[in-house]
Length: 279
Image (cartoon, rainbow, N blue to C red; front, side, top):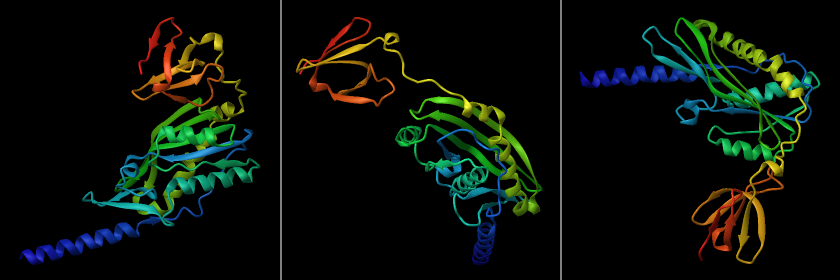
C-alpha cells in the first residue's frame, strides 16, 4: 500500500511538473505602439526586482501562474526562456526605433543593487536614463487571470540624480485562464504602452534641467589637513577606522574620494570644530 501511494505521488508530481514546464508563452510576436521620444541620448534600464526572481525561486523568464480548481499552481515562463526584462528591452527599443527615436539599453541583473545601478549610470554615455523597475509583475488566477503590477519609473541624469519618479500599482484583468497564451502577451502590450506613453513622462524627458552642481557658498566646507601639510577643501561624508571618504568642495557632483586615515593630521569642519587624528 505504501509503495502504491508513493508510486501515485511520483506519477502525479511528474505530470504536474511536466505540465508546468510545458506552460510556455510566446512573446515573439508582441509589439509595442509607442509615441516618438523627443529626448536625446537616452538610455533605458529594465530592472527585474520581483521577489520570486531575486530570491531565485523563479527564473527571470517567469510570467505568472494558472491554477486548477484545487488551487494547484502551474508556473508559466517565456517560450524562448529569455528573461522578461531582456524581451521588454528589445521590444521597446525596436518600437522607438520604428518611430525614429534611438535609445540605448543598460543591462541590470536582478541581483545587483541600487549602488550598482548608479555606478552604471555614471559610467554610461547617456544624458538621461529611464529606469523601469519591476517590483511586481506577474499574473495569477484559476477561472480568470489578473496581472499584479507594481512598476517604478525613474528618470536619472548622467550623475545619478533623480529627476522624476512615478509608481504604477494596480491589478489588471487578463481574461479567461483558458486563453492565457493569447491574452498574456496582449496584456503586457497594453500595460507598457499605457505606461510609456504617459504624458507626464514625456514632458519630463523634454525638460531642460540645469547643472546639478551645488554652489560652494551653500556648503559648509570641511578642510582636511594631511600630515604632509596639504589642505583639501572638501565635504566629509564618512570616517571609518581606516579611511575618510569625501567629495571635493569645488566638484560636489564628482566621485566620492578616499584618503587613508593614517595620512590625515586634522579635519576642520565647516561649523568651526576640529578633529585631530593621532598616529
